[in-house]
Length: 196
Image 1 (cartoon, one colour):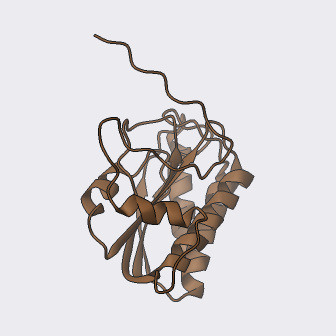
Image 2 (cartoon, rainbow, N blue to C red):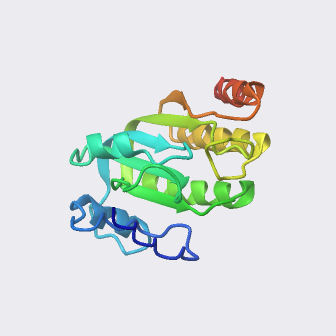
């Protein structure tokens, strides 16, 4: 068995583009994702449709990215820990690779910037928000360091931004492998409380 090649060093930018796996080229959608990272947009670049991929689980939204990769009516966002499952990561419209140990303040700033960029590019009819409990600092399978309060602020930010634009939100729960099961239950319960 050949050794796994070393991963490139982490860049300082939290919004670094995700390169395609070796031997593969990125689908055309990656050009749009790169544009969201700061390249100027041309007139008429804004498009309408659905936005199913507001994925805030500690693991990349690989299923959503793979299923909707060629669907122009769907826009996918994944905010996840870079050094975690899956490998390789199929490209979303906007992948936010977070380094290990990211805490509330940095996470929330990156989330807000990502949501603003996505909503400036896309007019969704509905948002499907995957509210993962595994970015929690006591999660056994994650390496991010969000507090209960940080996760609650995350949920509130998503719901508030969508409410301001009158976009309905469908929420699904994900992840949650805290050392104490009661913590996972509390995180998901807080999501429900914030949503109502």
